[in-house]
Length: 333
Image (cartoon, rainbow, N blue to C red; front, side):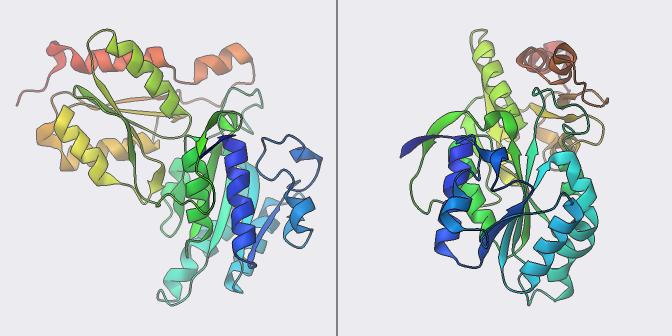
């Protein structure tokens, strides 16, 4: 194990993939230029090591980048393309939704279409609403696309390597504020299976399900609640599609309560799917209504105080947990 930031862990995964397979290449806006001078950013140093045929700067056109990825994948390569900020994926949506997501199905499963689309997500870096809109619920709604959203350096490396060598198209979401967060990372060809959630904190009173940077908000809330005698179990989904339903349901059946937390907006957010699964498959185990803690249904503000208001915090989580623990809101069994 070695201590790396999340950005360095992603860089390690990209470096490993490029060294393992000559069909892997990286493309995107500024992936090899001064944009990535910071050593904590994922493509730092890779152009110098592998050259412009393997690490390709592209024009400022997300549609062209996605088209490059689909065409290269269809020709037997393993492209890893960067779309930069999450909202920009809307410009690449035709190629991803109408082509990448459907080609393997249309081949009857006979052909593989491996491609990885890296996008930056998150708020609290003052980039404004056109750069800060989390769209994971949109992506999760598209059959044929896998969706990965890690929360720490170890999983970031292992899941990115698994994504690159998966035979299906994968959208890989990177929380920007985590790029500089350090952690222990396995060396070499280390992979985390896609579709497996992780119980990052065991508990017995209430289950909290989250992913990405919001996991750290949940863990902070769990520490506060522990001083009050409330034991919060925190599940890091890691992968949204395919979803590890069994991990979530097993926890709900143990605790009898469920909170879902994410930094995306509340209405039709991914938390609604988790709530629906709990209602359909674990209703008898629920002792209280399912609660969602999410961002308000507004564009992300650019002003730091307003942006801080927008992002769900540990106080909102603890308030929600206390509410479902209140005997007056318990569901009759």
